[in-house]
Image (cartoon, rainbow, N blue to C red; front, side, top):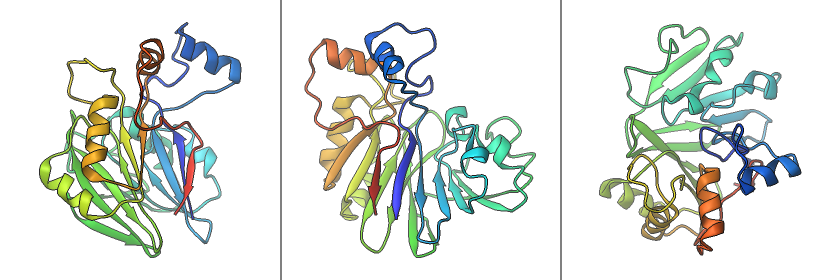
Length: 246
């Protein structure tokens, strides 16, 4: 089975609109357009499980594909905008969400084909032999990360977050994670606690001790700062299309 990223950037994407920084200029030259962070798991039968739905062309990308479920991290537009069209599907799609009564726009009011199911931290769901377990993350809205366990591998999808509380860190450490993907959106020194920096994200990875760690939710500003200041980054920032076998 394949776990692949539809995007690995922050809200603005890379290249950012009208940005002339070296990171954005190089992306344009290479024909790269990295969208906001979201991923999907392809199952053995060809069906998929989506992790976040910020990609507004989900209806096109998976038009003839069975979507077993959507696991939403939180109701910010760059993670749920794709649900606006996906809810018009002719088939019912379970959508697992954090407990957030505000939601986004009219998504919780006009559900159409989406069947919302609230997940609490450490609650698990099994689909086709794959177990997804919710983990509480510290962000500006109620936010969940997900531990994804197959018969052979365990991965953790942890975006967006500025921190992880001790009880959740202890749980993550106990899972013996093979691949961990975590928010490292902000440059070092940012005052806001909504997202991790490469330094704070690396510290969390060291606490969790996965076999491999990766940074996601990249901003062109952060990548440019790393380049210009020649900062040694402990873990790699992955790009759109990155995938692992699970």
